[in-house]
Length: 248
Image 1 (cartoon, rainbow, N blue to C red):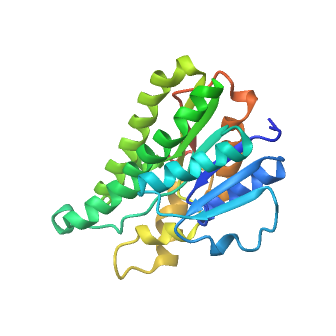
Image 2 (cartoon, one colour):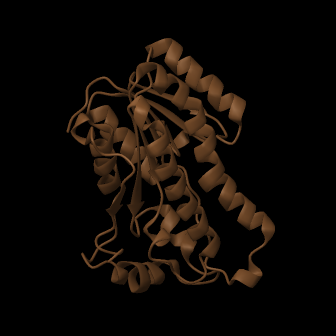
């Protein structure tokens, strides 16, 4: 499953999953380009193989410029991991504002279009590449009050499947990972306003996982490593559930 000296771009690099993915890729000997609004959380990773950019990935020209810099420096972009995402606080549809809806769609869907559009020309030159989107098991096992978030993750999965068939002739593989409830800071943001976050984690989220625990960021990082690797050379257009059985 190991890969050697590939160049991997990771969005949402400062988040729990993003950081775990970066740690795993560096351990495998890859070069990693981390993108996020803030990279402070990555300050403890002192490795020459990691290069970070503070960037809003909704800024199309800036993202394209970074990808051009990466390709000019290393002569390749082997992988893109879209780990960026935001949550929705459980809210009845009639109380969801257009600003909240638009923000979820911008960060969880529009960002995928921008980052993928930026890396694909370089991957086509190489006739190889792997693109992975971290979506959510909620796209297939929804919860009440998360309708906007669920819509954004369903769109992310559909976008990925559409790209898989479009880019197959260029030997670019495109896949989705659906994490189940994950032990990250983001999980608490799904609780209704005013709810006891820790109690909700235990009574709602942990109890919903047949394997009996929350997904760890390392679980997602391992799945990402597989999909980026040559061991997955015939895997494209698939959705890998890393959810402890939550989707059953």
